[in-house]
Length: 441
Image (cartoon, rainbow, N blue to C red; front, side, top):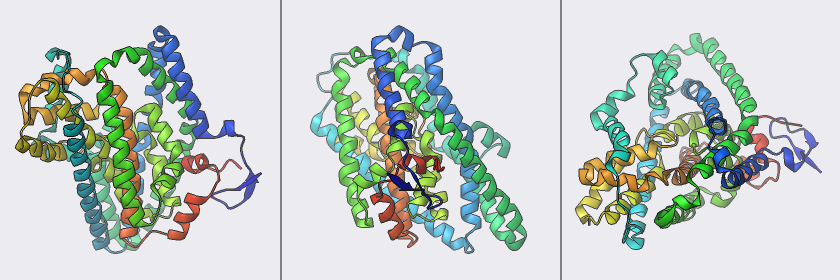
C-alpha cells in the first residue's frame, strides 16, 4: 500500500499504524488513564506530572517566535495595507458573532438542564482565594494596558500572546513599508519560520509521552470518586460543546462548503494532543501549517489563528456561562433575566486574552462572577475539583472553533482553494505527517 507525500508528491510506502502520531498519542492517553487509575500513588509523583508539563513547555517555547514569523510574513507579503485591515475586521466580526452563539447556548442549556439545582456541597472561600486575586488582572483597564508590553524582549520572554501579536503587527506593517529594501529581512524571517517548524517536528515526537504523563497525573490525582454530584455539570458541559460544534460550527462549515466531520477527521492528531495536554496552544503551530495545506492562504492563517487564540475562545465562552449558572443554582441564588444578559456582556470581555493553557478559563470565571455578584465568587470552590476534567473540553472546542474560523475567513476573503480543500479532506493519507509538517517517506 502506498501514499502520496503531502509535501513532495512522491509515492512512498504507508507507515505501519503504530508509527502514526495520532495512534501513538491515543495509546499514551489510554495507558496514562489506566496507570492513574490502577496506581494513583505513582501517577501523582512529580516526575509523572513533569512529563505532561514538560511537553507543554516545549510547545510554549516556540509559540511566540512562530506567531511573530507567520504574522510578520503574512502582513509583509501583502502589498496593500488595507487588505490586512479587511481580513482582521472580518475575523473580529466572525469571532464576536460565533462567541455570542457560544455564550447564548451555554445560558440556554444551563437554564433548561439546571445542573446545579439541589446541590448539597458547601463552598470553601479559602480554596479559591488565589483565583479570585488573579481575576483582578482581568479588569478592563488592566487588560488594555497589559496588551502593551513593557519591552519587546519581555513580551517574547513571557510568551504573552497578545503582546507578541501587537509587536508582530507593527513590525509587519513596518516591513511592508520598506518595500524592496525589506525583502532580504523578509526572506530571513520566512527561513526562520521553516526552521522553527522543524523544531516543532522534533518536539512532536514527544507528544505521546506528554499525553501519557498529563493523563496519568489527572486521573491519579482526581479519580472518578472526586466527581460526585458534579458529574451532571461535566456531562452537560461536554454535551453543550458537542452541540455547538455539530450544530453551530457544522452549519457555518456547510455554508463555507465543507463538512465539519471531515474537518474533525483531518485534524484528529491535533485534537488528541490537545486532549492529552489540556492545552489548545500545544497544537497551535501544527494547526497553522495544516490549515495552509488545506487551502487557506498563508496571510489569512497568519492573521486569524494567533488572533483567534485570544479572541475566539468558544469553549471558554460556553464554560463561563454554564458554570456561572451552575454555581448560582448550587448556592440557591436565582439570577434575573437582566443579570443573565449581563453575564453575556461580561463574559464576552473577560474571555478575551484567556489563552488555551489549563486554568485560564477558571481565572476568567472568577472575573465574571466578581462582576455579576461578588457573593458568587466563593462558589468557585464547588467546581474547583473538577475544573481539570472540563479544561480538556474547553481546549478542544477552542481549537476546533479557530480552525473553522480560519477556513471561513479565507472563504469570505476569496482566498480559499476549494480544490485543495476537497482533496485534503477526502484523501486517505496519514494526517499525522501533515500535522508535524514533515514527510516520513
